[in-house]
Length: 91
Image (cartoon, rainbow, N blue to C red; front, side):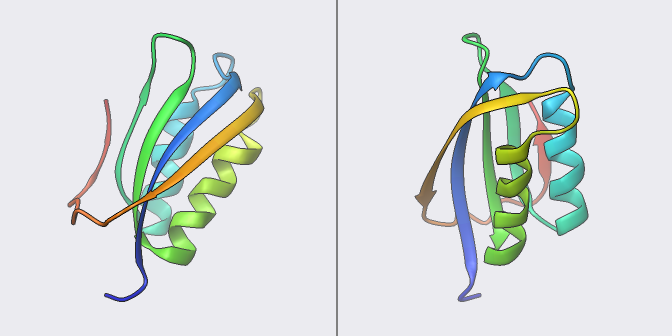
């Protein structure tokens, strides 16, 4: 698949009000994106998203906007080589 993309995302902000991880997982599953998401001890959310480029960047769009109740202050997105993840997990 030529358009398969993998990104590593770190989201900073007031993310605790909403279940940010679940919102990302729901959007990823809706878009057919695989990978994982987890909360970090410093309050950030970390995610790896892999799949067709357009669908991956739709999930990144949610990371930038945040679900209702979350305030996103920054999003770092780093591209990585695809690793053929098979499913999406909340860690």
